[in-house]
Figure 1: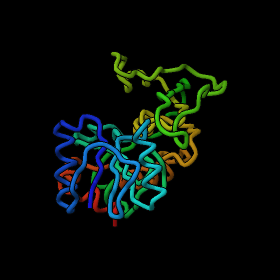
Figure 2: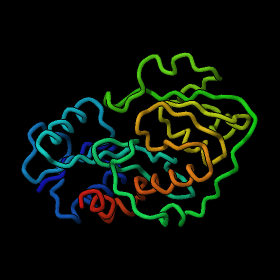
Figure 3: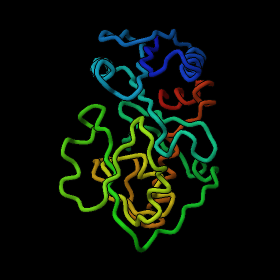
Length: 234
């Protein structure tokens, strides 16, 4: 029973936590990918880029689980925590993780700001990485009107909360920056089908989205203990 771990910074403390959690569930951890999964193998990959996506498709074809990790939708340091996203098959996508009750979000005691009524439109593109099923298409946002905030990548940029101080609406394919904007009371127009942050810009719809979203955000303690993997593999 092997867990193939295709993780960014596999030699980091984060990588060590993934290894410990998987071993606690009884997996022998193999670093890298394979196109020929065994009958009890699983794949744990950071996003689905290049060889990671090719291996994920081989696992899916064999009926074996694929777990996809990425930076947390609401930010890795959300509410003073240490978070990542973990889901089945595709991250950033609804329906790829089991959803429980409201308690996981409600326990964060995070107050959602009232929606702003006036302000500018800000377009937030992504880097366009990942498999075709979820990546932002070339040429998006297709003529949408607003100020474009370029994806910061590794360069220094104005902090998001400062840059969106005058914004009343964010237009996105499916960016985590838009999840943060919703917390701050900025309405969001999203274009990605089945985006994990899709909602209707009402207080009830936004709250319901966060209560679902919370089940795809996992703490490093849950990774380390194996609980994050166990929930998705049940």
